[in-house]
Length: 571
Image (cartoon, rainbow, N blue to C red; front, side, top):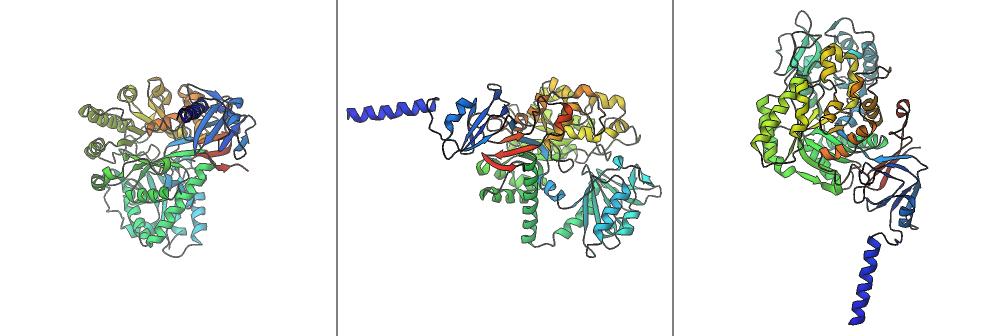
């Protein structure tokens, strides 16, 4: 018995020594050596090497500390000094929308309205009569020359309708907050001169009151309803196959660009059911934090049973609700405190009533869900802050809620400190600033633009958490482009938009890593390279923290690693 106890004690001591950093007999699945690693871990900010085991980070440190984890079965990658960062977290984008954008016509690069018409005309030649033509990405403010004739800068449908007499056409604005339809689509929808504007939306008309083909905000539903009815004619097998294709395309695009986690800004319960099925069969390639975007009645009956935290080995989380209070600045749908500088009788659109948003927010807090409300204009942001503050005061027992405002794009000066005070996260998209800057001064005037447009530095300095993303497919899902916008505020021509609001390099990297994790309550499992966290890692061609501004634009993703598995490798 004495000998047995001695042997047992000896084994226990060996195990303790091994776990405390004693001699290790190679037990890593993957080891990355010779890297320039920005861990985003304040306790261990820099490192050279990482060991990975069972999808998680086993150890982080210098090479001589990590080499002992290597065995004959360990995959070892010599990084040759390349820059390593935690996997990028896109904190606001549209997952299936991204996949769909890779299937439908891409109009982002069309330089003017004539090019858009030409793209559609070419596509129409290959379509059967009655088949819908769908595209996305046009923006009237970026057309050169401006379309003539136009209404508020928008082109008229006439030329488009001439080349598509037999096919309905639906073209989404780059912002997603307006669409352009041809005559065939409007006839199918029953839209004419006598059709009234819906609440929270506008049918854009000429001086005679005739619709020009552009539908803003809630008016989009006239056309999208008919298109949805068209899509509903597919079989259930076809519908599922189309969704799966969109998910796969979106996943591949994200992995190629270093995105390992994705906050999906609004999906129905139907889509969440599909994502759960894919998680069950290990078919999700990146980690999804999905916001519920469905009707109040459905949420009222289903919300409690859909809360999921790290389902499917951390690949699916559902704990938030997505809503909209207003539209976009480009389509003049952002809800403003004062009229638009370029449309003096217009304040924008309130697309969901205050009463409805309060009702949904009460449902959220009762079920321990996070609210994430889209607000672009200063009036929209103020009203959302007011709703949140009221809900928080009436629920003092609920702590650490981390409710978010999605975009927080234009703020009144007095509302900026309220984010930190209330603990509200600003889920912003730096790339929107440089994409929109050509028309922001025109929409808001210089004073308002400088005071409150895309003021992420003011928010950070006030103590607020700012996370970053792209709003894809509104913008390219590429984090490098967004990082460049955050730290330079330069557009493609090198013009700078109020440079005092630039993020520091480290703040920008945190906004795309640990702060994105914080916004989804997952900072303890991802967002930094630290022992015990998911091995979600990106290797880049240059050092984002120290290369020149111009060099940022040339940075490419060399490896994307999710859960310790190499999901993308550059050729």
